[in-house]
Length: 47
Image (cartoon, rainbow, N blue to C red; front, top):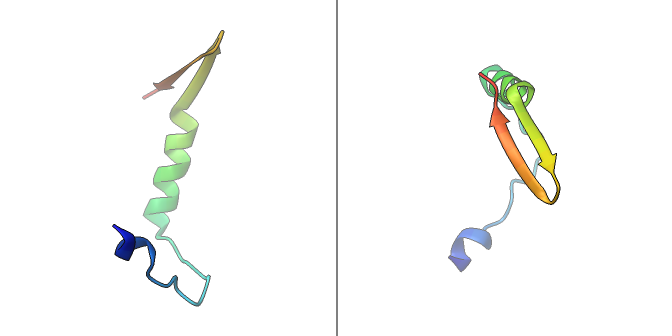
């Protein structure tokens, strides 16, 4: 497990996600609803 986290990160910080990835994350965040009730959190995916 230590070997996984000890590898060097990429030197350039310019990560370019695919358009499909960005679209998926935006659509997911639009459909996600978090409801707080007392000290509980309920997550609902509104599809």
